Length: 229
Image (cartoon, rainbow, N blue to C red):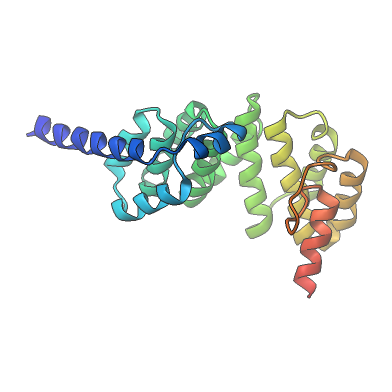
């Protein structure tokens, strides 16, 4: 009976993988590869497939085990975030090879599960900059939604000392936290803007017309303007 259930599950994975292969688009691959991702599936079509499959935790686990980027993105959309153990999430983050998989794992699974606050300080202090960037993403979430108990001045101290020389992914995450502190906490706004102006991180980042610059002083100013409008 167990073997039969396993065979059905494997067949389902095979069917999904075939459907993902049919959705591959060379133009999507070109765009994704510029961002460090190695799949060729349009994300709108991937989300439509996830909506049709609905939540299937067993299938999600098996899709993740394939190691395929598109399959892992789909897995993160159809899984149950609360079904993962802390150690499992840690292993998944360290095994996630591409930025999109890492981002979706943190935003769609870890943030919605019960282990985010346990993982946040552990990841933030990790020597792997990609893992550390996930910790900072969780910290930014707390800055925005549950700042009680956070040492915001201490976070600004760390950002001021370490952000300029941090690797790209970690620098981006720390910069987001800097901007979020300035946007949401008026008592720290002037210092957050000052840190951004001194460090000049992402000051010259190319920004499309109508989009907000990731340069923290500009980002803070624009979001505060919108809040006050």
